[in-house]
Amino acid sequence: MPEEKINYREIVTRGIWKENPVAYQVLGICSALAVTVKMSTSIVMGIALTIVTAFSSLIISSLRKKIPSNIRIIVELAIISSLVIITDQVLKAFFYDISKQLSIFVGLIITNCIVLGRAESFALANRPLASFFDGIGNGLGYSLVLVTVAFLRELLGAGKFLGFNIIPQFIFDAGYQNMGLMVLAPGAFFIIGLLVWLKNSLPGISKPETYK
Amino acid sequence: MGDLLSLFINSVFIGNILLAYFLGMCSFIAVSKNVEIATGLGFAVIFVLTVTSPVNWIIYHGLLAPGALAWAGFPDLDLSFLKFITFIAVIAAIVQAVEMVIDKYSPLLYATLGVFLPLIAVNCAILGTSLFMVERHYTFIESIVFGAGSGTGWMLAIVSMAAIRKKILYADVPKGLEGFGITMIIAGLMAMTFMMFSGITL
Image (cartoon, each protein chain N blue to C red):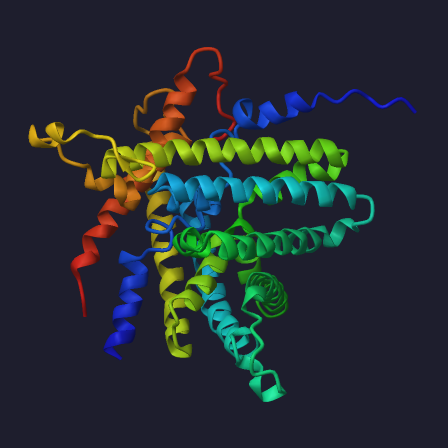
């Protein structure tokens, strides 16, 4: 049987931009925001989620013909939880400080809608390798949103970029102040709202949202 | 008693599980279109949280915490890394059991809540509450109060959001900001309002 040609590159980029999971599918907002006060935590969070999504899609897709459909959610959750446990242990072993800052949010990858959503909507119907790349694409798309929000919050809220001060002192002397709101929870909501607005208004890609 | 009341107020308003920790956003966005449905889901979340938080406390401190299995001859065993998978299984099992009990004894309530119960099993707020309960070293009683408080806070947020979105229907929202965008901005304004309570200590 001839292998049908699958465009892996297309699968990956689709997740990153065209069907970006946070902006278009309204998924995974849960844990997307609480870790975005600093760039470093959100980068680690993005990597962790990308790895979990990619491998859970790969495993679930490999098992897709073996999993009975009426208990598939439980099986999927068991696979995802095991991967999250491994990720959490690795983070604790090698990046202890960051894992302390991420606190419970690594565990919450389990209930992140993106992971289960990709498993349900893509991995169950596609080949393992395609599912793996789909997971990577969606994970990276999620990371992109996370890091953008974190960049804005860290820059406006603390005047820093990855922990370094980048706003020169003379601007502070001239009366500039850090925006305390950005460090707090409401800042994240506003930034996400405005980003969605920006993305919808960009020419060329402004597909009307299906979300009502 | 004062401590417990303070913990309750804190988990409802200041540390609101939804507006301060962003947990349970998926169903918050999806279900906040109709006040009645939001209320139904809110009650279901309060109920499930009040049950799962203490049950997970018992399981964590009885089986998983470091040294918890000393009675069985394993004083050095630390199974706390299993907490994610255990908690999610407990939550799914309890939600299933609650659904069956309600179906058997109160068909009327089942008709209202039934559709939401499966949704709750994968709600981040439920797992998040159990994980916070472990992380913050709550006692058994505190875990019940914290569960109930988080649930109440979540319900308060989703019902107010449903009411606001009903009014927003008549407003002239800029194109592109409609739907998801404006919902997030309203949530931000609500989060600011809830932070107003942060000076209160009892």
